[in-house]
Amino acid sequence: MADLAKARKDPAFNERFNFNRKQLSTKRQFRNFGDPALYALWARDPAAPAIVRRAVAFRQDTDARLRTIVALHGWPGRRMVGDEAAASFFFLFGHADDANAWRLTQLPTIERVFREDHVAARLYAHLHDRLADVAGEPQIYGSIMGPGNTPGGAKLYAPLIDNVKAADVRRAAIGLPSIETDLSAFRDGADIGPYMMPMTKGVGWTIADVYSEPGSDPRGSRPVS
Image (cartoon, rainbow, N blue to C red; front, side, top):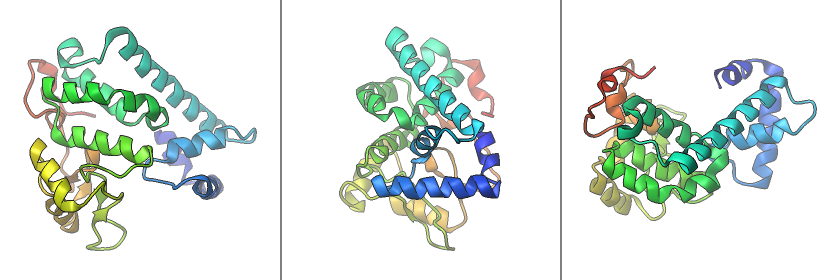
């Protein structure tokens, strides 16, 4: 995916990318995680750059591998594969936006893994919100947010299923601060970190940010690259 980001710096590539985004937007609302659908649409064009076709094939192969792992072995939790591998699976699952129909079938499993593996509330909440957003539904916990495009313009990037007050109740129930607390952090200059959480500029994160309780895996203390 880093190659695609590099390719976006090419004016001709970026022009076609924006054209495809506009075309996709005429068919459905282009939401926050629409790039996989955009590249899949582009890859069907015989004139699509090779890098686009490779990226789409790689994503599809990865998604298929995720489904196969779950079908054959169940969800790879911390006890099965260790902290880092379990976290990596979560991140791959979280980015499998073009396999969202399958991801939605895994919500009961995510509920269980959240409790059993002591997954961080931010990861849990963002998965729920991201799956809903990709499906064209409102977010539940309000984790899809950021600093906006203007100074002090922090905002939610997707509508809530009800309202901020109700979302704050749900957030508190799983250990998250209020929506306003996070928006305030973005107004104060925080970057968008993992799970779209506000993160102090220049501060890295470790595997400890994935779990609310440490595990027995000694690899868990190493920084995530």
